[in-house]
Image 1 (cartoon, helix red, strand yellow):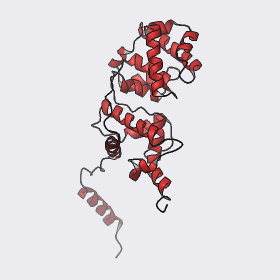
Image 2 (cartoon, rainbow, N blue to C red; image 1 turned 120 degrees about the vertical axis):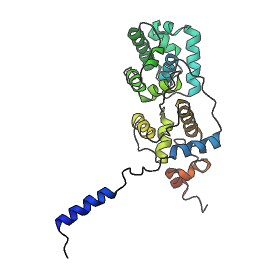
Image 3 (tube, rainbow, N blue to C red; image 1 turned 180 degrees about the horizontal axis):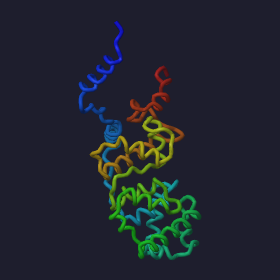
Image 4 (spheres, rainbow, N blue to C red; image 1 turned 30 degrees about the vertical axis):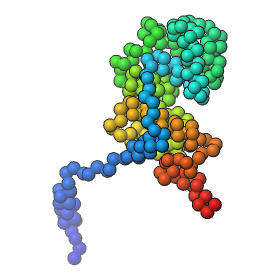
Length: 255
């Protein structure tokens, strides 16, 4: 016997009334937490960072693009010794600044960016400091920093996360991009999109220091095992989780 429209409507209403008021949420995404633990087991606990003030971190991060970490540290130490204060660095000529940072990549371009940024910071606040950023929300700080030439999401994340500001952010460098794409955590995308996707699955309990440690672990993996040209997938503690690694090693079983 056909069911009348009135009966169908009544059934829909009854079904809706009997559905649970609060739906069960999906299980939390624990992929980053698992990855973090595996990397800790492999590399060990990372040395806690001794955070710099925001301005010093800004200078370091601006100079660090496509430059090895030890080289950038050496350049920043040299700048401190040569100029004494960041005000003296700001007031130096472009030629002097370029000469002082000649060991980083693109020193000509970075000298212009650095001098312009230090002058703009002074004009904005009246003195050369970024300590005043602590009173603002993280998103506002990052948006303001990214107005400067040469400053993108990687640098702004480094300033808010690594410095004494100690805010929740994930610094996405070239190693982080490569590793997370190979793991299938993010699509091929820029640093801003990658950070946004990863922050969706970052455990809520992770504070700024945990995010910093995670960055350090991923960076170490990218530098030592998950390299661009010669990835050592068989040695990687994340092999069982990694679609790329499984493809790379799929033909090795019979060798």
